[in-house]
Amino acid sequence: MTFVTLHATLLAAFPSSVPWSPKVALVMILCNILAIAVGKATMKYPSAGPALPMPEMFGGMGFPALLATTSFGHVLGIGMILGLASSGAL
Image (tube, rainbow, N blue to C red; front, side, top):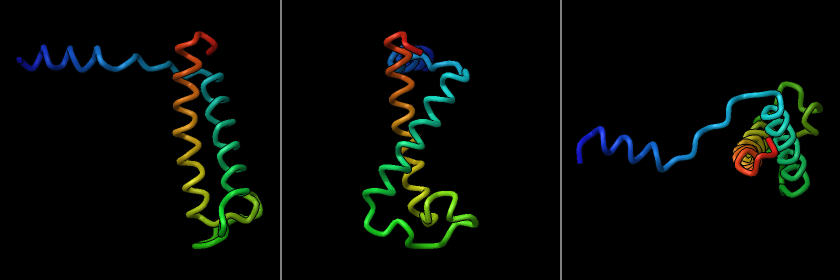
């Protein structure tokens, strides 16, 4: 297989990305807020670790908990954005 053929095969295997729009941003923001709320409610020690500069802004969560929940929020957001875009709702 040549490089050009391999490159074309890999490009065909992945769906096209969704262009940024305010709707895409809103979906990502909502997914992150949902992930922070779920993480805050389900973590055993959400305030463990180094504290944030303004912990009251995030309900007293520590830096590791905030990093974990927003990471999950981005993964959830990517799935929601790709799913909504492929169904034509976005």
